[in-house]
Amino acid sequence: MPVRGGLYDSPMHGVSIIPIEGIGDITEGDDVAASIADALDGAGLGVEPGDVLVVTHKIVSKAEGLTVEIADDAAYRELVASEALHVIRRRGDLVIAKTRHGYICANAGVDRSNTAAGTALLLPRDPDRSAHTIRLRLSRRTGVDMPVIISDTFGRPWRRGLTDIAIGVSGMAPILDLRGTSDMYGRVLDVTEVAVADELAAAADLVMGKATGIPAAIIRGAEVPAGSGRAADLVRPADEDLFR
Amino acid sequence: MPVRGGLYDSPMHGVSIIPIEGIGDITEGDDVAASIADALDGAGLGVEPGDVLVVTHKIVSKAEGLTVEIADDAAYRELVASEALHVIRRRGDLVIAKTRHGYICANAGVDRSNTAAGTALLLPRDPDRSAHTIRLRLSRRTGVDMPVIISDTFGRPWRRGLTDIAIGVSGMAPILDLRGTSDMYGRVLDVTEVAVADELAAAADLVMGKATGIPAAIIRGAEVPAGSGRAADLVRPADEDLFR
Image (cartoon, rainbow over all chains, first blue to last red; front, side, top):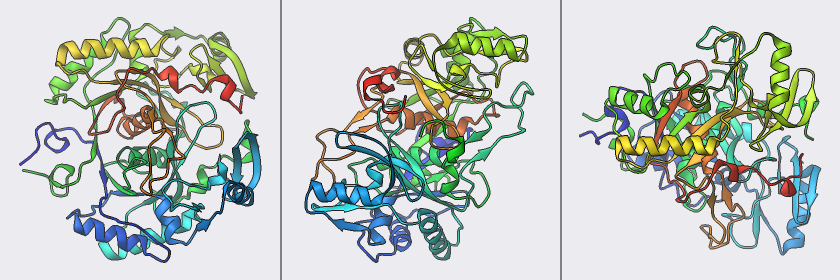
């Protein structure tokens, strides 16, 4: 029986963001794809063509053994320094640094939330490759080749608050290229590149939350740019960057 | 009959993003709230407590008479200059400027997409007030006091592609404040402020698109921070800003 006012008894097409509950704690050596597939099975939730999977990097990093013991704040600062390719700005305890991936973020992506006490978590060494591995394994298990996004929570220079963005992508182009597309008035669009992978990551965060422990979501019904790009494509090249 | 695999026949709770089709063209003096309510009625789509409305600023600006005739590119550049409170960076034709609202964006928010030929569109003078007006009028019409977000499409310094963000907010706090909240391991969270209004705007863009002419969406099922903040709260104060 349809829920009153629900998306699926409306004539309109929309997008659903479905949290994947029941994934449980992930530790080094775990198969993230298998854990997700088990959780989907446990919830009776099938995967459909067109679905996109968004996974927070935390469980990927944990599975990849990137948990590091840190004795104290000094050890944490040393870890941040070793993860930073280049420090962009520093103020008090806050370090904004470029990582080896090219991402510019606080503390070079070294994370102390949702990790066991006395530990910190590093970013996956190659998040695009991690996304690719999860995508292939899930495809074998579910029979559906589903684009995979690995997300992390980043700040923005001019805006308060953090949002989730894509740091790893497989099975889709992260950017929708509208160059040459016309608007409703037949004029070529000013806005030529939409960071769809980042919008999908932000949307997924609406059901994942920071304190709920839900590390993955399915996004259903979104128009996803076809292609085989990488999240690395979302990093603005230094020669186009006016703010470094 | 439920759609197989749909959100509402799963035991999981999720978020739906529902495009509002049929709003039609908006011109100066139109009542945006009435146009949206008519479109909802036309689609047989009821509003429910907990829903959030996201509206692109374009129809708000058009209704508020902020369409400006521009004879040529020189006139456009003059218009950008007059809208800019302060130019932050300039390279070739690209101007990154701070607007009177405090937003830092390309061309001081002056838009030439989805406007009639020979015209440009300015940002609403007070987008928080515009959101408030739409919210009150919709509340009178629907009986549901629904938070309203006015969105626009902005670039980011270090990342390619654009995403939608909140430039006007009414009926919710734009930021979820997690200060003092503990994570799964009982540790106080590093991530203390989530820009939920920006994530909602990005999510809505997944169904609005740039060339489709859908200017508004309902987001259903999201956890929305209670409160009465403004989108202006999302602007990082100059003294906290390391990148200006």
